[in-house]
Image 1 (cartoon, each protein chain N blue to C red):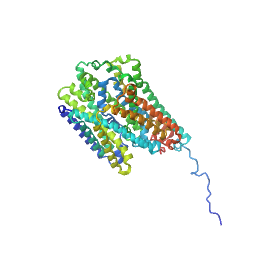
Image 2: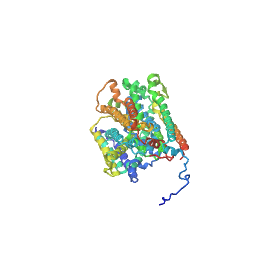
Image 3: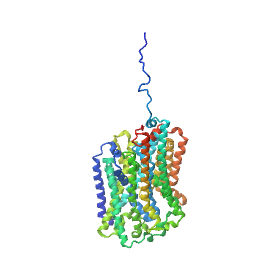
Image 4: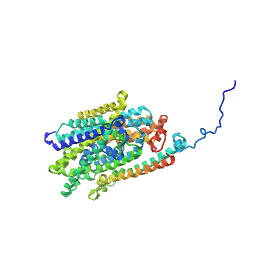
Length: 502
Length: 120
């Protein structure tokens, strides 16, 4: 990192986002009194606000920086990432949104215990929540480090620590209630931070006679749907499976559903989320495409992740260019802060319930969990540099799709799913997808099919996990939970009907 | 020794009279009839979900295969943009929202039908 790149306006933007985040959080602190406030904002968040908060939380560094960078580097195929991250919400809407809310549980392990009526599934689920959470938090801190490095020339660890501290302060004092306001604000900040500069950039491009980005790229860039070598079709479908099915298994996504007042509101919230994500995801590919014309050197340099931060300064001269760059930098920090906050809440909830338990009183135990949830991946991010942001996030999706997705979907729709079947599926799916993740993190070299299968494991690990759960459940019919009929009433009937829900 | 006094009552008092059973009490009692109500709700909602997912599979899910089998489609240009870009960067989002909206409408309708049948 060289100190020549210091950008005062970029630094101001980062400072401003951090301060505003803390200020809005402080506004929420006044309302956070009970443990229920901390975990689920006492379940009183309305669909519009809740949907903005979900959008704010979901659009991470991978969405804000990673998508544009991938499109710039690899072209059309990479559009499947934003499409899959949006379609994942449609799958979540039709399969699990209302039942998940109606289950009335705080976290995924709570859901597991409610459905299977044993502690064992709960413990396996807790372990998985912490694993997926760490896998997702680590790249957020790394992305923050890289971005702050670009605007301020700092060492990579500084940005990560900054994000970690801001998140921790908000979570420690305000919990979910305060974070809901912060997240909602950050969705609109991120949308503005991409939308406004994009309009300027498109105007400049139009003045230049709107040349085709495809003309400045290799022929395969704009048209190829299978650019990833000989196994492009497999890779594309594996990405589709991981993203479409992985969303529902992400700990920070699921915990948001418990903040809805009822199942109907959970559905409507998800629909608004679809709209918000659709609006946002139109924008990153614009940066990727314009990058082909105005910043092709980033492809050669292998630093395409910075395109969103650098493009405004390159295309617009003078003060305006600096201001627009500062805006995208602010958006990037909003992305790191919001996703890290959501993940921290989810992981802290699980650590406090299942690791700390009754050893500390409710709110204290949540706060202790939050400290653990932030510090462990922060240390990992500082120690293990060089795992790409979008890559690690993509792997988290694959693990979630291979473990929680089958457990939730079958648990909600198939009464014969047993605890033994669920555990077997979680373990098999977790080991298969997790093994591929470890292999990637160790940067082992493979060729041919082995490389393709290990780089994108979802296409084979997800069906295997589903099959394991079904087969083992059919072999253990005596393990069907005794109260499963009552649980089904609880998951599927509208709240307006007065029924015994167990 | 006379036996303890026993109060003799007519058997058909209010407490003993069988009350008309409601659909809700059938579900609560987990009777066979209650199970029928529940599996009917699950089947309706499950079929709706499956229908939406099938549409996604046949449209979005078939795109990579279509583009692989008919490479000419990739070269098509719509309004100055390559067809894959028009579909994957623009059209797909309103399409997903439309599907979601249709789903929510039908799911809520199914639930109010259930509520009407079993009563509040």
